[in-house]
Length: 296
Ligand code: PDD
Image (cartoon, rainbow, N blue to C red):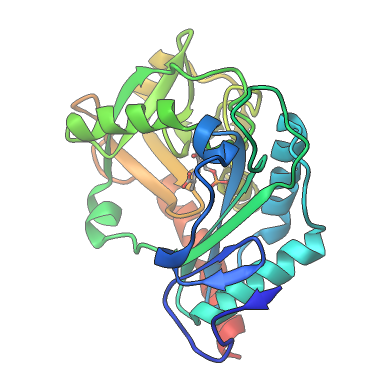
C-alpha cells in the first residue's frame, strides 16, 4: 500500500482508494466502475471513538456476508481490513469518526452479467456528527411509509435509491426518519433499525431478509438483556407501532435515539421514555470506555 499522505500528519478527513491514501476531494474511480453504473457494490459504516473502531469484527462479518450474497470477491482478510481501517483512523486523529468502506465489483464495459475483474475498494473517514441536545431531550419525529424496497435488505448494498427516496419523503414531511411498513408489519427505518416498547418489553422485528441486521441493533439487544429489560425479536404490527409506549431507532452513526412523534401523533407521553434512556446510558458508557482506552 502506498501512502501519499504522511502518517504523522493528523487530518480530520481522509480517503483511501485501491491502495492509496488520498485527500477526499482527490479520491477518484472510473466512470465505468460498476458501483457507479449499477450500484453493484456493498458497504459498511464503522464508528470510531477516541481512535478505536467500535464492534469492528461484527462489521467485518456482515461485510463478508454482503459480499457472499452479492458474489463479489472479498479482496482482504479480516486482518488486512483491520490494518487498513485502523491506518485510516490513525491518520485522521483521536476525534470520533465515521469510517465508510465500499467494495464494488470493479471496472468493466457496461454489461449486466458479472465481469472477471478486481473489486474496487474505497474507504473514507469523516468526523462523526454529534447528536444534538435537542434530539436527546425532545426526541425525533418520524413518519410511516410503505417499504418499497427489494427482498435482499439484509445485504448492505450501495443500491440505496429506495432508501434515499424514503428518507427524503420524511424530510419533505418535516420529519427525521421514515419507519417502513410491509404487509402491515414494521421492517426498519430508511437508514436505521427500529424498536418499540410495549408494556415494558423491548421489541424489534426479527432479523430476516427484509431488514438490515444492524450491528447497533444487536448491541442494544445485548445491553437491554444485561439490564434485565425484557426483549424479544418478533413481528411488530402497524397497530403495535402506533400504540407503542416508546419507539427508538438505532444506527452506527447515531447510536440509539428516541422517536417521540409518529405521523403527527405523540408516541406514549410524547417525551423520550425510560427504556430508551436506560439503554442509551449503557451505550454511552461503552463509548466512554473506548474513548478512555485511547487516552490511556
Ligand atoms: N446505515 N438499516 C438500514 C437500512 C441502514 O442503512 C442502517 C445503517 C441500519 C443500522 O445498521 P447499523 O447499526 O449496523 O449501522 C439499519 C448506515 C449507518 C448508513 O447507511 O450510513
